[in-house]
Length: 279
Ligand SMILES: N[C@@H](CCC[C@H](N)C(=O)O)C(=O)O
Image (cartoon, rainbow, N blue to C red; front, side, top):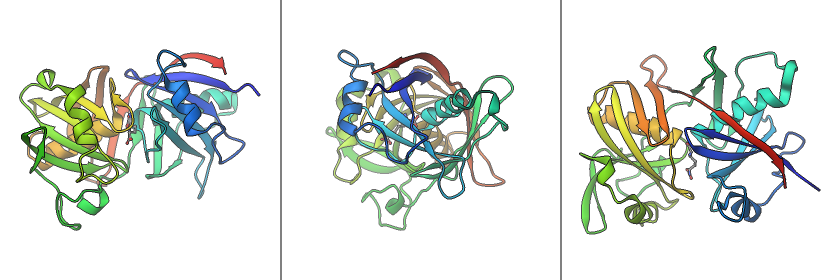
């Protein structure tokens, strides 16, 4: 049976979106997702995202397979793409401008704004070592600016979970980081039992950060929404930035806010439809 898909991207972080609204079980396996994500022998993408029926009172659910077939809890750029994809699927019957989406990281709420962007209530960051998870500190402690040995060098890292795990390091020049060699060493470090997404951050000023990312299960990507949110939190915890900042990624910019009122993170950025097809 042919399966229809739509390709979307959020700042070059690209996904194959599949209408899976008739079942809570993804219509393809992780092995098939690996093949579809292949940039030479497949469609090419950083992951496959499924629009599933809602659970626990939400409008819809989202599941995602990384390009290596693993399943992360959340995807920030992906959920913006899903928000726009759902409006496309619903067509003229759409009655609201936001959706409640059940994810493995809890309920996330993307909202379509008047200027064509998507603003997402990403929930609250989780900071305890056991929540990341990492053994870098005792279970109930936060991991803020702690030394970590990677590739014969000591990096001062801060760990933040946005439902999925992130390890953030502040550097003088992001362009100088050898991501391809060092990224996998962070990802598979023994202190991260569920592997890790790694962000390198250069502070331009208190409201503007530059970021490069090595994603768990996907490698170098042009952008990472949860990574941008986690990096802003790390910036605040290390007194490197304010609670609102622009994060510049190789694929473009995201606006991130860590609200003092409700402790939630709000991410605003684009989601672009690329093409549709069948496989
Ligand atoms: N690119 C995504 C994150 C996707 C999941 C990540 N690779 C993981 O395994 O946690 C984003 O925009 O947040």
